[in-house]
Image (cartoon, rainbow, N blue to C red; front, side):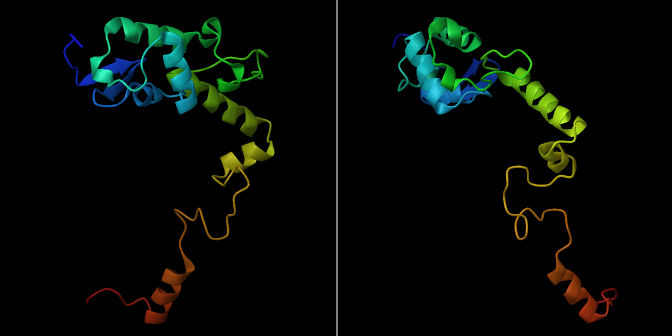
Length: 159
């Protein structure tokens, strides 16, 4: 390890602490989970247990190259985050701002066609079938607090 330790490493626009293991540092990139991180490091030939502060610039370039085009390196399709994309029909993997933009456009499309998911998104309700009677009550007045204020008569001022 002749290279000096670097405290902050930038991989695909995401800053990572140099003390993290390489697999966790790659996971900091938006759109990369632990399984994909390990697969990318294996294809790039980088040790996932090495601290990221010790890896070289050429290793970072290899990792970024594999992340940009995982199909070229033989990474399995089931690790991609856009399988059979609705617009193109291809299996692609999106990262960082592209992923954020695509998710936002998908939600806007659901709202526009008034699908069930779009309706739930539009009214800030739970989308994935969770219960709503007792959870997800942020921003709404809770009945218990209202009752206690009504019983006191609302004379809170002065004391």
